[in-house]
Image 1 (cartoon, rainbow, N blue to C red):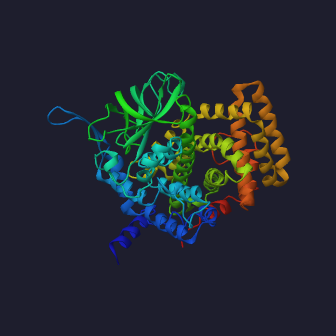
Image 2: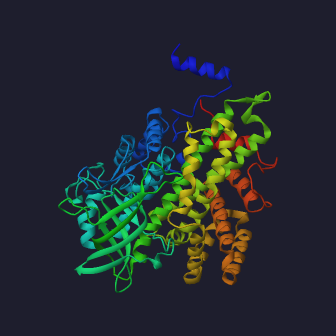
Image 3: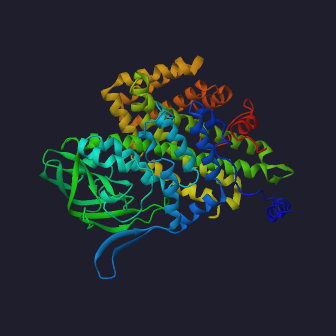
Length: 550
């Protein structure tokens, strides 16, 4: 008998299931297997390998060490010289190396026969699975991938920087970008006085040459400060401009960026976020000098997709751990998972995780098809803020409920669920809070009401018999918002719920979709989980979405 077997036998005697580890996060998730069934076999094999990796003891230890050993800022060297470097634990670099090799920063932009036309969908699956392991290192990879959308606004910059941005070999050396095999890109948008209102930014940019500016100012949050360059907003004489600002000059000296301190964040602790002051830092103009917000929004749109995917991923991991625990613990004479109240709590949570997952993947697919399909283009524009709003809003409460299923041993740092819980709020705050997402939807309503009708037509089709009545309710919410801006969140949430139900029906998950739509759209007011009634087979829902291990 092996030591592991003896340990598991002792845990069974103590009524303690083994930890959620060594279980294929891809194969044990029937929904993602179905969502990725259209991908090339080689891509699905890659996802199978990734699914085994993210729950492995080795990977979980890397995630633990990277988060327990927070990055450290070294502003000066031993001679008193300014160096502005952030040191990371080796576990961080190991995570970055693995994820860059998997193309989390590049695969959306790579053209190959294996993923053609499904680049965003394939990347979404990789991102969703990796989020179940560790989200901090995904931040620079999200920005690096999304930066290509902004960099495309300048042909010279795109030609010079894109090959290194898309390279899959991680290069953490502190050298000028021109000498490196691969680079990562960060972002600096928010400032103290403006926050989300980036039009209030005070950073100034003066033109010194064709497409070259000097920037002076500050950024309240500089994400991933050891990136090789940063996409920033600054005021030009013509208006707000968008710039790519290298961290180091070609001779290896600083480009005038002085890190003031690192943020002591609630979660996302493996990743560094800094306050930075800069003077005469040169940057490349991206797009027109007065079109910076529009330029950076092309980047922000993609980062919002990643916020949704990460939220869905950590919800899936948290609930999978909770279901695993409930199946391995006996309470009051039967297994915890079989206790009627607990079964309904788990099933109720499973509905939200399924909905968040299908919504996020539907949005990724819309990004793939937007160039050739008017319906998908409308879906991508309207649903990005809606999906981001709803998936990120429900994550903290759901992960807490999963923690409660596990009980006291869920409220300790040794379990990944504690890290997931601390991580959850950042996806709602980063790249636009809930109110900003709602205002973005109102902006579409004011400028392109026909986009709503295009999306509603698809929802009505996919919702079947419930379609017309549901869309009538959505139109009534639209009319309300045209009179009352304060009702925007009501519209956003109702569209999210309807779209999630429509996607579940479209995928053939009829019984799951029935339970979701009747409890979310047709049911009474609710604020906690476990509100399913006996009409829905809670055990069936749990076993279907979280099948027991063989």
